[in-house]
Amino acid sequence: MKNSFIPSIASIPVNSSSCIILKFGTGVLATPGGCAIDKAQFRRIAAEIAAIMKQGISCIMVSSGAIAAGVHTLGLDARPADQAGKQACAAVGQPALMEAYAKYFSRHGITTAQLLLTHEDIYTEQRRHNAQATLKRLLASPHVLPVINENDSVAVEELKLGDNDELSAEVAIMMKARLLILVTSSDGLREKKNKARIPLVTDLAEVFCHVTPEKGEHSTGGMMTKLQAVAAATAAGIETFIVDGRKPKQITKALAGDDVGTRFLSCVAPQE
Image (cartoon, helix red, strand yellow):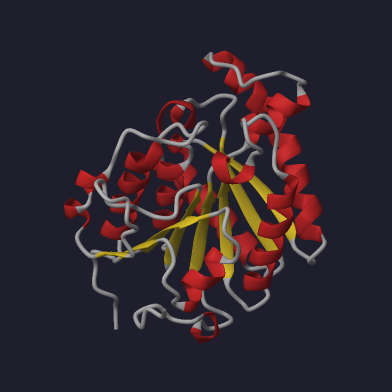
C-alpha cells in the first residue's frame, strides 16, 4: 500500500543537498545473544544502502553494535554488565565493527568513513561546526558513507540512555536531513492492548500511552527513547520512520512510499 505523501526515490534530485539518516540498533546488527555482529545482516544492509546511494541519495549511518563486536573479539561468553566492561568491549569492538562495514560496502564500490561523536560534539558550537563541516565534505563524494557511533569508550550516554537513538536525531537536526529512519528490531510502534501496528502518527502526544517498558534484550532505551528521538526530529521538521531491520528492504520501501513500520509526520510545514 502506498502513502501518497512520501516521495519515491526517483523523485529526489541526484544533487540534493539534503540527506537521510539511518540509525541501526544493536538488535538489528548483532547475533542472538548480542555477543557478535551478524555478518548476514551486514551483507544485506550494505547491499540495500548501496543501491539507495547509487540512485543519488546521500546517506549517513548512525550505528550501534561496537559492544557486541567487542564481546566476540575478546572471546567473552557474555556481555559485561558493568560500565567499564562495556566501554572496554566498545574500544575493542569499534575497529571490528568498521572493518565489517568496510568489507561489505566495498563490494558495492562504497567507501565507509568513521566518525566517533559524543553529545558534547553536537552541543558545543565549535565542535558542532567541525562535525557538520566534516560530514558535508564527506557527503560531497557520492561513493562515501559516513558511519557515526557514539564514542562509547569515553562517553556513557548510549550505554545508559538510548542506544544511539538520541544521537541520530541530533545528527539529523544538525545536518538538516530530509528523513530519519530508526532501523530497529521492532516493526514500528504498536498499540498497547491489541499489539496492532500503528502505520501513521500525526500527533506524537497521543501515542506515548502505547509505550511499554519492554525492550530488546540488548537495547538500552526501548521504544521510549525512540519516541523521544522522534519528538526531537519531527519538531525540527524532519519526518521519521521506525522500521523492522530484520525484514528486507524496509528502508527502500519507506522511501518509495510503501506502508512499512510507523511513519511520524513532521511538526513543521515544509518550505515552499
